[in-house]
Every structure is written in structure tokens, then in C-alpha cells.
Length: 469
Length: 144
Image 1 (cartoon, rainbow over the protein chains, first blue to last red):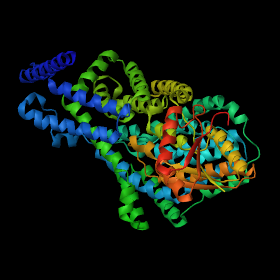
Image 2: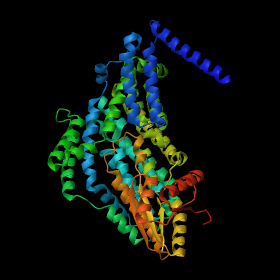
Image 3: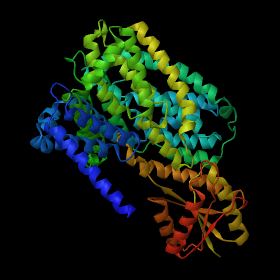
Image 4: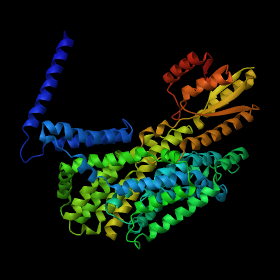
């Protein structure tokens, strides 16, 4: 009996809810925020939650969100005009194709370059040169990771370096966390230095139409500066681990390590090295050539390398991670829905009210809000959604034309990603790689290192922004 | 002479199991095979650009972990064989056990925060393995 009553109540509840929504849609409030405002917000929040809580693959969540935006617009909008969010053509204008092409070009180049084994060779040479000095070894690996993250990208640097770093740590008798966690933190700091290093850097840099050098001169100095407190903190946190390193190493392990760090394709390395050098020259001289966008440089480099190396194109295209590109396109569409329905401008208005016309307050907010948010939720959708807010504040706050709010957003999103495992993709990938060697890196253990580094680097970034801009 | 199969990932949490299975092989005069399984399903949630051949790189990491296990065995005068496979642990354990004609599959008891299984999950996993392979599955106790 009780079951039937509950079932009846559930039916009445569902009918009331559907009827209520139906009535609201049929009688939209004039001048207020319509149903599309709330539905586009709900879609974004659901996508955000699905990504941050890892309910499903990031790409699946974003794609589902984009599909939801269009379905609500076309099907819902047919019956209730108040449900119009954004049509397909308009949503495509919100996609930053420069970001998509840049990521694709770099992926093609990296896929071929990573097959040379050069990075592992460099890491092994670093191990040899350190001659058993654990401090020197850790610092060298960390700096190598930061540099690679800046010029390849942070996830690639972690995928290439972490497995070998685990082996090196085991060889010298140190817990792998002592090398891997600092490498992950360094990848997020190093990734902020260039427009190709980290997704938030690419998204914001591309949105502003910055050349490689324009971005570099503004962000590289603070990224390098942030390495100082970072190295001090990790040196302090791992002082005991490093002091306990072995002095004699197993010959079998050294032999295995050396075998894992061989250059596997010398001709490919020569070609990829030359093309990489050409890309760097074009990145640095892009302003001279009519402000050639970084995406054009990356794609050109990839095209030249493909034509020169002549890899199996089907295999080559399989190696391009299409999920990443679909993820970015879908996120741009979902955020486009927020912009089209006025959600972003409503939020921007609220932040504008909070900051008033004070640039310094707005700068601090633009560092710390993304900084804290990036520690908890996925930083890519957050950055995409924050960009129109930075646009709005830059156009309304006197003195913000120097783009300080955009730099603040990049630093907040990049450096904030160091606080927790969920903060950025390199963190999640490193946790998986460690798990494969039998080391479970938990949330709290990561935060022990990540939180102090995040606070120190965000503080330094805030001071630097306030002083320089 | 029997054939003992032991799956291992490396890391401190696996050392007690490795030592115990090495001692068991020595005591029984059995052959010993360490298995490492590369499983990249942890990448299934991220949309980061994964252009590196992660499986091949982790295969090398696995070989390194098994060299460490072999060294522990050699220190006890046992020559251990090693196998690296790609896929899911359960499927590969079943497949390798059948291929090498294992007479005993040894699994370690949960030890510390790095342990792969909770106690109950380990019991269920072991029972399932036994059903699928027909081979005795022994879970080493913490005191072993």
C-alpha cells in the first residue's frame, strides 16, 4: 500500500514539475532572465560537474553539453521561442579556431618528435651528470620538465619524463614522489611561460591575438620567478628523502635504465630537430612577418615534418588526439551558449560591481578566483568562461587596457592547477603513471606539496602583476 | 616441479609479496614467473593531448619493475622469469596462467596505502581467477 502511495505521489510530483516548466515556458517573464538563461547555465554546470567529478570522459561531457545546447535551441525553441539559446552557425563563431589549429599542429609535431627517444636520452644524461647527487638530480629533472612544458606542452612533458623519473628514483633508492610531484608542479609553472605550454595560456593568448614573443615577454619572467620559491619549497619538503639516496647503484638497473633511454630513430631526430628549430625561429620572429599566428607556425612545422618524414598517414592521424580537439570545440560551444544568453555578462557585471573601478582589486580577484577555482574544478572550461568576463572588466575599468586582467587570469588558472590532483591534466596523468609502478598518490599527499607551492606562486604572481602593470 | 605465477606492479607495497613468493618458490623448488600488466585505462577521463605512445613507455617501466623483482629473487638464489602484457590485470592473469601452465597463482595481501586491492575485493578476485583458470590461487597473509 505504502509503495502505491509513494508511486502516486511521484507521478503527481513529476506531472506538476513538467506542467510548471511548461507554463513558465509559455509565459516568459518580460525583461528578466528567460528560460534559456537558466538552461544554458544548467548545461554548463552539468558539463563542469561531469568533468570535475570525473563522471565521464571530459570530451564526452563537453560534446554532450554542446549537443544539449543545440537540441534545446532547435527542438525546444520550435515549441517555445524562449528556449532559443544559440544556433549552429552562431555557435561556430565562438570557437577559437586558432586554438584548435595550434593544438593540432603541435600534436602532429610532438607525436613524431616523441618517437625519437630524445627526451629520455636527455633525462638519462642528466642522471649520469648528477653522479649520484640526489639534490642536483631532482633540480635538474624539475628544470628540464619546466622547460619541456613551456616548449612542447605540459602533459607531453609529463608523459615523456615521469616513467623514466620513476625508474631513476628507484635506482637511487628514493621514493618516486620526490621526483614526480615536483616535476608535475614544475610542468604547470613552466607551461605558463609560453603560449603553447598550457591550455589556459593557449586559450587566452589566442583570444588576444598575441604572437609567441608578445606572450613570452609578459609571462616568461614571472614563470621563471615562480620557479624560485617553488624550488625552495620542494627542496625543504624533500630534504630527508634526498639525504637518504643510495651511493651505489645496481648494475642491472642502470643497464635497464640506459636501455630505456636510447635514441630510437636518429634520422627522425635530425629532421624533427631541424624543423623544431625552424618553428622556434618563426615563433620568435613572427612579429617581423606580419604577426604570423602561432597556429600557422605550428601547422607549417607539422606539415613540413610530415612531408619530409613521410610517415604512414593513417597511423599519423590516429596518433593525433582528436578527443582533445573535440573537447575544445565543444567547450567553446557550451560557453558560447552562456554568452549568447547573457549569463557571462551577468556574472561579469557582478564581479565588476565587486571590483568597482579599482584595477588593483580586479587584478587580485582575477588571480585568486581562477587560482582557487582551478584547484577544485577543471581549468579549461573555467578559463574559456572567464575570458568574456576579462573582456568586460578590461573595457569598463580604467587602466585595464594594458591587459593585466588577462595575465592575471592565465597565472591564476595555470598556477592554481598545482594545488590538488584535479587541478590540471598533468597531475591526473602523473597519478596514473605512478599507480602503474605501484605507488598510489592520494589527494592529501599531493596537497601537502601542491598547496604551499600554489599559495607561494600565486602570491608572487599577484605582487608581480601589481608592480609591473 | 610446479610453476608459480605472481602479478606485480613494483613499489614498496609489492616487496613483501615478492619476497614471500620467492621464499615459497625456493621452499617448493618451483619455477617462478613475475607478471606485469600495462593498463592505460587511467587515461580514459582526460582530454589532454596524449600523443606519446604511453603503452610502449609503460611497457619499459614494467620491464624495469620486473628487473627489480628478478634482483630480489636472485638475492635468494632463485632465477625468476618475467612477462609484460598490455590490457586488464584479470584477463592477462588468466591468459598467462593458461599459457605457461601455472600450478599456483600467488597474490599479495593488501598492505598499506599503495595496496592494489581492498581485502574483500582481493578475495572475490582470487575466487574468480580460480574459476577461470582452474589453478589454485593463494593469497599470502600479512605474516607470510
